[in-house]
Length: 116
Length: 116
Image 1 (tube, rainbow over the protein chains, first blue to last red):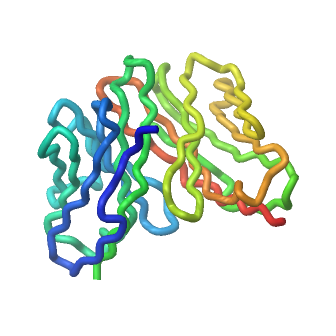
Image 2: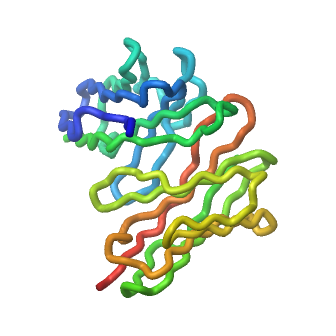
């Protein structure tokens, strides 16, 4: 069964450093998402991406964040200058566009980001 | 704005007991989608069910059942004859159909512990 994959599973970085989290969505999906979950808290929406541009973003997704689909398979989340409060689990998800039969979002296993 | 409330922070039951996890939502859209995800201790988010606002039919899948009631804006989840492997955090989520928005808003989650 196709699945969303994410690398790395755990990333440790120093405050102020740039990190790139990588995701490979399900191959025939067209919508891509990033969510984050601070330890012990709820899952929060960051950004959705469709047709090579941001579809929607939350207030969390400030100028420190960017997303990119550099090729036909990867979808990346970049944090330019990490802060301690960026420490969280970051989930990638993908789905079909609404109206194509289903828009269920399937999640990857997550990348745990630890900022020291 | 969409909002999901899971009032039960933690529930503890003994194996074989039935347990119901509550979810109440708020939305201005007439078309929307409701989801339940399971997050086991390993951390991934496992899709359980998707329900659209036009389909109030309750659903049963093995030991799992869902009760969707638009009149009370609730989408409750019942596990029958619970097992230790059901121990996880369960998230209810809402996605509105308006515009291009595909983001999901999650509730705070309910941590279910099933004791042997």
